[in-house]
Length: 257
Ligand code: ADP
Ligand code: MG
Image 1: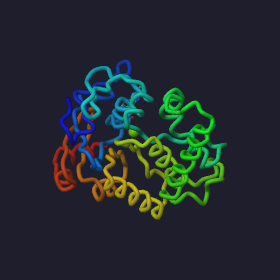
Image 2: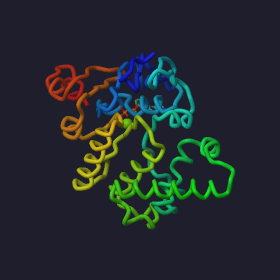
Image 3: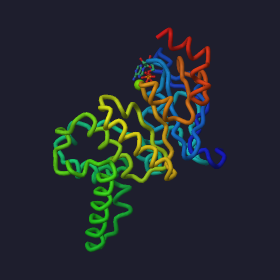
């Protein structure tokens, strides 16, 4: 089991796709309240690791623990319900809905309809109250990410950066403890990037835990207290930005890219 203070632990994770070994024995831990960076050259296995943690892929071998509980091989909605979520790109069908609707629908999409129904009381008045509370929380989330002024816009009309903010807002609607971010800053302009990073730091100070995959090395080095480097499906090195910058093996792995 996982000691307290370790909301996420990955132990000997292996994922094979036919003859391709995408993840090859990755082992690492993520500390509570941290913003941990997960980096590595293209094809290192970062996204596959995320997909295994969040239940999108079933691992070939290894174990994943969320707090004191093994979650290996559970379905995505079961994992999300426990408090571990990832951001998802806004699917096409959601683009035709408004930004507010997208955020209000997020818990339903991520937790599965049955989970929502199970917490929704049968009394009509209570259902209305539930809806009102959901709407209120959605508004708070839009305000927090400063996209409340586009609440009634169709999601497909947002800029790339606004879309990323919406994806974060959606993930947080499930009230998670750990949030996995796979390249949340891709296509985001510098102003919005700064805003998004500020929000992440605020949330982290509130006790949320983040695991971040990001291509921009400066973003990782300047924002992550702990950095894990993957190479060829396993963990090559980990430590502070300083440790990573000076690690010979890391330098070599990236030079080969
Ligand atoms: P990263 O996110 O670090 O760039 P990925 O996890 O996407 O790396 O990919 C790791 C390796 O696994 C790559 O060689 C990639 O081609 C392969 N891979 C990833 N997903 C699949 C899949 N669904 N089917 C086959 N091979 C895959
Ligand atoms: Mg990837």
